[in-house]
Length: 435
Image (cartoon, rainbow, N blue to C red; front, top):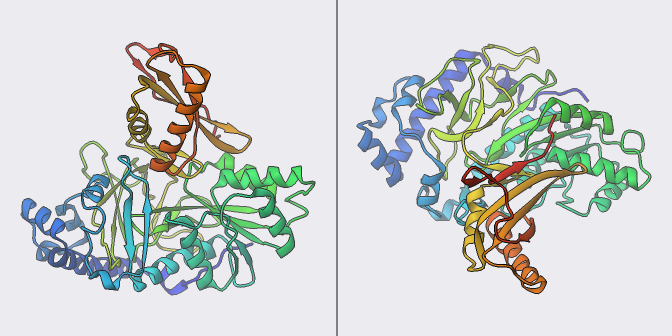
C-alpha cells in the first residue's frame, strides 16, 4: 500500500503559512488559558508575562513549562478551560501515585483528534477500501479510540476487536479479510506467531498488508521483522494523552522521521537539564503545546521523550510539517511494558503498603516470544511459608495492577536474596533486545 494524504491542502502548506497559523492559534490559546484557567494565570503572573507579550512563535519560551506533576496536582478537572457541560468524553492514564492523569474532550476536540489520526492512518496506507482491525483494548486509555476515530473519518470498515484473545484476532482477520491493523508492534509480532501456531502463514494466508503501531520502543529492526512476517509496511505513530492521545505524528513511506502536525501542535526541542532551546538535529527533550484543544489546553508540556528535530523544509513525500526522530530514550525512569507506561515508584508504592514487604525489590522486564513480560521480585521481611508467599503474591499482583493497569508476575524471595550493586539494589533490569 502506498500512502496518500487525507488533507493534502494542509499537509503540504507553505512553511510561512504553517507558522502564521501557529502564531495565531498560540496567541488565542494563551489568552484563553489566562482568562479561564487559574493555574496558568498564576504561573504567568509569577513569571511576569501577559498574553499580549506573545508576539512571535519564539515568545512561547516566555511561558512556563508544564510537568506531569502539574496535571496530578490539578486532578481531575483543575485545568479545564470550558464549562463541564461542554465535555463529551474522558480518558485517563495511570499515575505514579495511583492517581490517573485525566484528559477530557469537547466535540471539537474529538473532531480534531479524528482529523490528526486520519492523517496518520492515511500516511500509513489506510483508505476507505480497507478493512481495519483495531486489536487495542477499548477503555480509559486513549489508544483504541484515537485509531477508531481516525479510521472512521477515512471511511474504512472498522473491526473493533479490542485487546487479547489472540486466536480470535487471527480468526477475525481470516474471516473478514482484514487488510490493515493497529496496536503495539510487539503484539503484532506475537499475533504472527499465534497465526503460525494455528497453521496460518500471515504473509500468505492473511490479507493484512499495512499497519500503524505505537506506545512502545519502535526500532528499524522491529519494523523489518514485522514487515517480513506479515509481508506488510509497518508505520510508527507517536502521541501522548496530554495532547490528544495517538495522532501527534507518524512516519511516511520514507521511514525517516515522523511528521508532526504543526497546525495543531507546537513542538520545541530543549536541553533536558537547562530547559534552553537547542539546535535542529541535536538530541534533546520534546516540549509540545496544543494549539486547538478547547477543553484542556496544554502549554509547553515536558514530554520527557528524547528525540531531535530534522533540519528539512520539505520531505520527499511532499509534506511540509516538521519531522522528529523516533524516540531515543526518556529523561525519567519510566519503562514501557507492552504499551503500558510504568514507573518503578508505582511498584514501590504498591509493595511498601504491606507490612510483610522488605525494603528491597527489583523489576525484571524481558521478552517471552514477542511479548513483553514484567516480573516483580520482592524480598520479605522474614522467611515465609509457601502459603504465606502465595497470599502475598496474590495481594501484590492485585495492588500493582490497580495502580499501573498491568498484571505482573510477582515472586517473593527470602531476605537478602536480591543482589546489590554496592549499597543499593538495581531496581530495573531490562533484558529485552529491541534491535
